[in-house]
Amino acid sequence: MSATLGHILRRAARSLWENLSLNAVASGVIAAALLLGGAFWGAMSTLNDAVEVWEKDVHLSAYFASGVDEERQRAVLAEVQAMPEVEAVTWVTAADARGYLEERVPDIQPILVELGEAAVPASLEITLRARYIGDETLADFVTRLHRAEFEELDYGKEWVERLTAFLGLLKALGAALGTLLVMAAVFLVGNTMHLVTYARRAELETMKLVGATLQFIAAPFLIEGAVQGLVGALLAIGALSGLKVVLLGRVQELVPLGQAPLADGSLGLTTVLGLLIVGVLLGVVGCGSAVLRFWRQAP
Amino acid sequence: MIRLYHVSKSYGSAQVLHDVTFRLSKGEFAYLTGASGAGKSTLLKLLYGAEAPSSGKLLVGGVDASKLGPARLPLLRRNLGVIFQDFKLIPNRTVFDNVGLALEVIGAERREISRRVNAVLNVVGLGGKGERRPLDLSGGEQQRVAIARAIVNDPAVLLADEPTGNLDGAMAVEVMEILLSINLRGTTVLIATHDNGLMERFPHRRLRLNAGRLSE
Image (cartoon, rainbow over all chains, first blue to last red; front, side, top):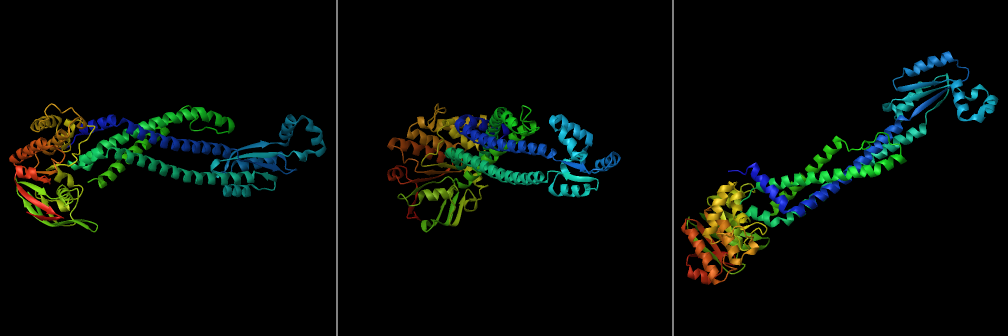
């Protein structure tokens, strides 16, 4: 005779009901771990999105030397447009630039007259494809862009360097904090499950003494762990949704975040599924290891 | 049914059992006697696999209990009935559930559990008390719940650690009569006790432990 699934489910249901407060504590701890992890992941995703927006803002201004006629400028424009790194190019003629400047600063006309035509040169405003915005690739592109027709290339080198360094630091920090967080969550959940099992040690010990197998003892515990994890994940999802509503709007007012992952009013299917899976896994692994530890120690 | 060959047990430098050898046949009834600390409980623990011997060989129902791994231990215990000195009842379960546990662990059907538990509760005089919790019962009644759980799956061997230790005279006699009736059905019974009065009233073979050494 073997214990049927129905038998195991009945025992799990009874145990869940009889140990409601212990199960609530376990679910609460899982929810706290997931909330912490979820909030961290959300913050990292939002920062990544923000960085992507900033990356797209990196562009070059190539100023034509005086004496390069419009026909030649058009030819250079075509050459630049053909370069694989280039996302878009806007040709700004000297007249366009002067008009733009006069429109923005109405009193500047006398100064421009005095300085002559060379004061506001024609230029190409170049936007790069995101994958080419790296320290080395950008330097390489600038070298290849350099021509006699250009008097000056302005590409915010310092800004790009800082951005690249910041991105590297962010990723390293994220990996370190993420690892610490996962370790802390597993430790916290594992110890809570151990305490939950310890509180029921008399029952488990008696079961073992009358001939229960490890599978017989563990199966309902694993189901309990899954339920604890599921409840914990649902609590964390609710809390994260609340946090998003309260915090994200305010954060977006302060920083131009672009399309943040939580900005559409929900956590998103992937996040919800991820939290549910991680929650259930935490519950099952936590309960499983606690029961295994008990099994090895009990007479 | 039970055979021990030169079994010794020590905890660190403290030797609790010295070269114990004896044999208990099928259907036999015997007392394991000796003063407190003589090694009675340790010997019982070896028999139900809670401890492993330091040396020697130990057969229970044909199974070498000295070499059982964790996976096969439940198989040994399912063929044994054990009455623990502290009863080991689960306080938040009913009497019915406590007794039924021994059948639940072998995957018995609910109907079968119900039939056998009710029958055995009648044998130990607890008919009608199945829905009570252990802590609502007297010490003697709790002892009888522990006996009921030990015999509900008709074990080949029944081990009892001081089964009358917490009971008054009349209650102890009642419990002994239950154990004797179980023995009459063919179960091998080994009782650890130091109650001389009881052993004189119900005389059977005595295995004497003195500082871990066995004599008869």
